[in-house]
Length: 222
Image (cartoon, rainbow, N blue to C red):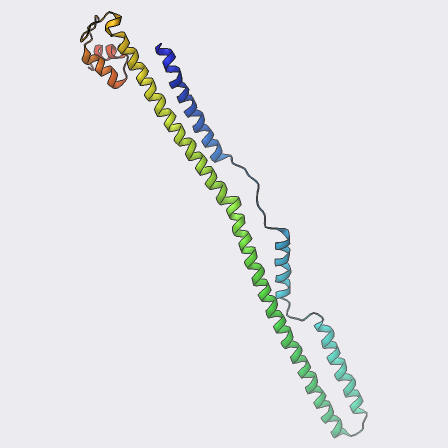
């Protein structure tokens, strides 16, 4: 009867050990899909960065060439008029117009670059959000899930271990009580083997068997 009663308690201890091992395995060997920043977002950020660091307008070189060729052609035509004073004044005015055109072009290019920098900052902000999500999915969520699962299994392991030990102690006490009960030839208060009711209470309190109590007494520890 005592052995049969101890089997469920032993199973609890075995279950506790298995749960503890599973908790350790979850903590050490958890693998899940990896989240990556979308390729389109990465490409958009690269493009925005390249545009932001380009100081020229699209086609600005062609426009500058046109300004230069217009001035050259006009200056050549002016020199053919023959009056040096008029030619110098005309060329000077043309140079001023060319400079104004170039300055206007440079101003537009600066505004264009500023707009591109704003676009780059916007793309970087979006990329930062993706990076934060990447950390949450790839790092934080697995850590939290594993910690919770491991904690639950550890707690279950501890509970099963405690229940198993308590149950085994109760089984031992019950077996000892049965061994010295009146139905086994003893009498109330003192058993045929010389064990009193206080001995039985001691065994019940500490989960000792009859043999263990006898051994402790023989060793002079009681």
